[in-house]
Amino acid sequence: MDFLVVERRLAPLTVESYGMDLRSFLAWAQENGAGEPSAWARTTVTARLGALRRQGKSDRTLRRHLSALRAFIRFLVREGAVEADFTADIVQSAAWRRLPKTLTDEEVDRLLAAPDENTLESRRDGAMLELLYATGMRVSELVQLRLGQVRLDAGFCLVHGKGEKTRLVPLGDVARKRVADYLAEVRPAFRRGRLSDYLFLTRRGGPMTRQAFWFRIKIWSHIAEIKCEVSPHMLRHSFATHLLRRGADLRALQALLGHADISTTEVYTQVDRDALRKMVDRFHPRG
Image (cartoon, rainbow, N blue to C red; front, side, top):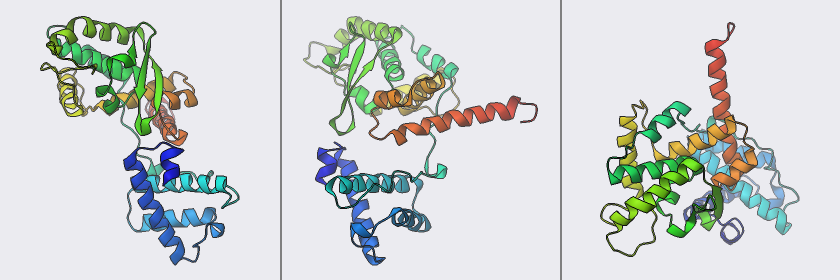
């Protein structure tokens, strides 16, 4: 599994999951007379995925197995163990892809406007929500931000993502303004003289946690009268979908989101197609 750690820089848990999937595949291939990589073909992989489906494995498991096999086959191609990557044209079934839930533009506006200026906590929460939607970062990346990672003067945020990968994400004017307000007036009051380089702090001076922010976002989504259950990750999904809808390049979006594989980013194109389909069904005279 060293190639996954060194070359693809995947997170430890992902490497562990891929390892389990590959060991399972190798055992299955051996049992089915295809123990050597030279005996593998596209049909070997599709047959394995079909066997997993018949076993009742979830869509998520199928996606992970395919990703693990793709990574392994590409490694074998580089090592000369197989001639070509026969997994490249294997398209994930639409049923395997759990389409992400997103907010509408109006719902995002209401959510970001919900934290008022009356309390220090609400001003901090407003900055966190604005930054989350402005960058599309994961909530784990948000709460781990250090002061040096946010450059308001340059208008960029340095995000440390999965697998120790770092990406540079631009900040819009609104996000910069709310974060600047938080840094100038809220964070000094929360720090209470303690030394901490975490960007977002609790009232007691400790770093914000994912669980605490999840609780806070539920409060603001209720105030914003958003009917569905809102999670921090929904803002990441909304960031991606709204950019694509306005013509953003898929490869650029992949870089902003920190996706290792563009197939992960492509799921957002399906979300937008579904929205268009619903619009046609609703408004077209022959829909």
